[in-house]
Length: 148
Image (cartoon, helix red, strand yellow):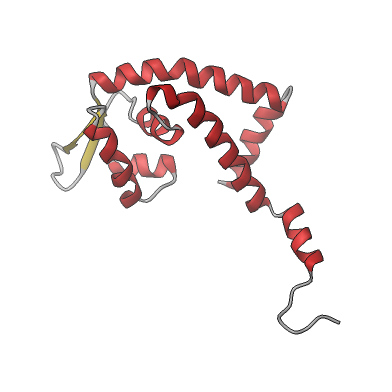
């Protein structure tokens, strides 16, 4: 019998082998590293690419819409925006109808960088899809959306 409060090592192995959260986190980190490496020549991270892409819309989105899309809180989004704004890739502005709201849009430099980054993203994404095999990328996306 185990000592009270001591979890057997077999339980640790079971969690290691079956925990969906752990496996999704590990996969997310591995994917992030792969895309970070691919985008490094542009001095861009995968998170920054996603943020810039989320601003590529006909109308400048508000903070709430972008935070929701990227699954981050507004404080984290604000921190992520600062270096991109400092680089002149995006600008934030007050909403014309509601001065309490902030909107964001890509600058011409932001559009240019995103245009350079997109082929890198497409190539890297194709490599990941190929590594997963026929039909598996769509199934994975579907499963992940079901969890989100």
